Image 1 (tube, one colour):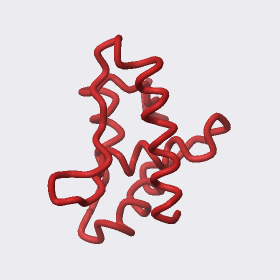
Image 2 (cartoon, rainbow, N blue to C red; image 1 turned 180 degrees about the horizontal axis):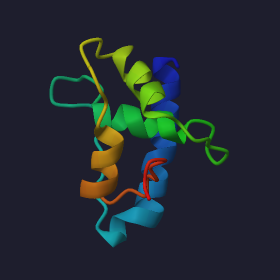
Image 3 (cartoon, rainbow, N blue to C red; image 1 turned 135 degrees about the vertical axis):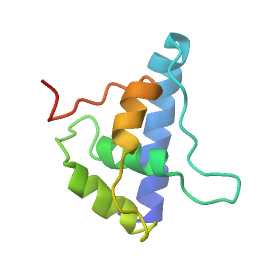
Image 4 (spheres, helix red, strand yellow; image 1 turned 90 degrees about the vertical axis):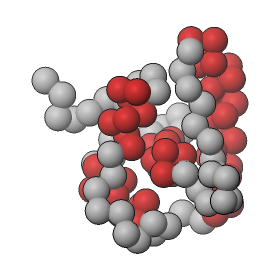
Length: 97
């Protein structure tokens, strides 16, 4: 995924956040941190939102591999779980029972 694609998908995420999630108390995810680097939370949301509205199920391994392209030192991406449990996003885990 190119940097331009990341920006385009994040724009869709932001528009939908404003329209559907903001008033429900869901926390907005910043695209970049104070140093100007993409945040891991935003990268995970962008990857999950790829091809919206025709998104597909994504494994934790796929998310980790994508985030490693920007953060090579990442060992195991936990952002999807944190976005779901701590920030209010409806991210469904394939391991939930």
